[in-house]
Length: 47
Image 1 (cartoon, helix red, strand yellow):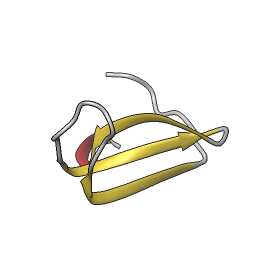
Image 2 (cartoon, one colour):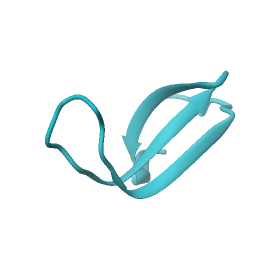
Image 3 (cartoon, helix red, strand yellow):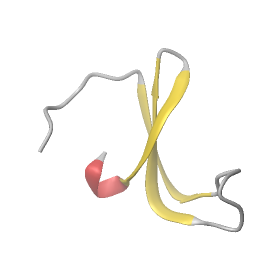
């Protein structure tokens, strides 16, 4: 397990549709934004 990290924003969404890979819908995921850039997409339970 990793230690908590401070970030600018976490956007929790019911659906995230990424550009790559195509034809994928991520259900109940969160997008982590830090320093104005998208850093990682995680399941809401991990964010």
